[in-house]
Image (tube, rainbow, N blue to C red; front, side, top):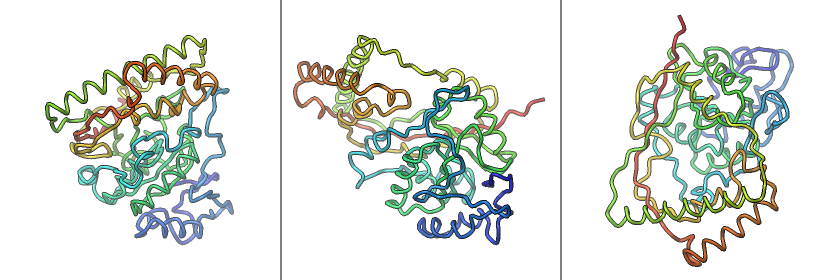
Length: 349
């Protein structure tokens, strides 16, 4: 499954295999056992940093070469405001329906695992997860978060999506949320996904969320929140434009979507499953604006501090003048069920 620099799979490692590692009962045992068997028959030892196994020496961010990628190395916990503000009540949804569809014990690659919410949700449903990301920072946060949930059956691996350190036909399913939009050549990553998937394996993508219903008061709150959020975000964006900053690196949204359509076809929709199953959750505007305020995205992390700080200072003053000093306490509600779409590989004739 996981492979060494020499090309040997962990099935060729001494005594233990990755498959046996996935079934330890606690995450602490999983992490403590792996180093004892991480030496390949070629003599190379897979290095581990803070419980994250290093299957690449590539930098977390690369913008100067033909192959480019944007790891969230400067983003960290800011990427998920709900987790940032309320770790004690962290929710990772419910993925038991996905586990029922795939089969408990199946191996899922969470590609671009980030803060690990999806991996944790899957592991708690008794799926075995390889959490892969190019960012060491994000994976360390993910590991800490998993320990909070007592989520076992996760191996944390720093990998580059352009060259996954996984054997051919070894993975039952690959989850991709928005990782393909953080690389400039998503078609190459899609080729890697196809390579590592087993015959009959699935690419997993989140589908449309389904509303569980709102009261009239909640609908009014949501309308006010959405209008206010859009207005403030739009004002901030205008501030950036007026600064003259033109640091757009690349855009691969359309290329990523077309690549998926060309190589995969929807097979099944698994309802009421995944990270985004929430029930009447309040969400303050300060949480909705948090990623904007902290530059928590692949591209915005490159925005110079002086430009961002000036833009946000002006934006905050605008918001206070229009919506009042307590504008960040404007609230909306989330009451919805998420679904995951399983895509099968289109066989080329």
